Image: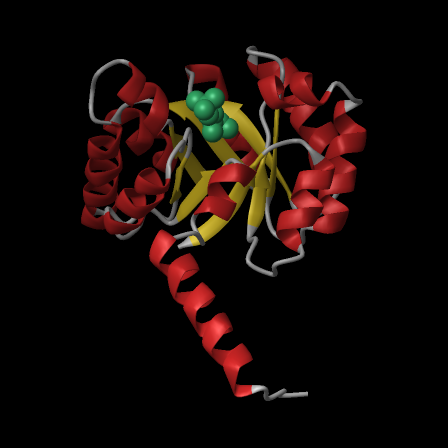
Length: 218
Ligand code: G3P
């Protein structure tokens, strides 16, 4: 599974990227508003730090304007992935941008049939929003399972399932079990993936026992 980080905070991205474990970045208009800086500058900075796909979302909801915005965003760097809403106009833009060789991420996916349309439109990624479905009292992960099965039924579909609105370590585990290609995760959750109380307890014991030996490796 690939790990993307879901933030527009460049300092946080640099910190996670230093691990060498980061495969890409997703942003959205809410994350850009939170960062409170110029959108195109942020995207350029992120693309310079992370060589993998960096999702930058169009602001318009209308096809012609979406296409204009998409072309501006795609010119920022070769690793920009244009993020489009899962609407009729967004799907139309996805199809057109795909035919131009521009990578796309179709976002705000909440049903398997929406995901099927995104794949037919040639999306590079589709983003089902797990946490927001859970918020409604339904099982977000069931959507990942359904999309995986549908995509596997049709080998001609090459869209990658990018599990988004991931809020917990359990979400990452379950998305991996369900066969999502990518999880996009807030930086705090990504770091928490490495933690386990028994790892900490075991390490404390090893460190104490090593000190008793009086030895040094270097
Ligand atoms: O990038 C989209 C998605 O990850 C948003 O997550 O927590 O706002 O539902 P959330």
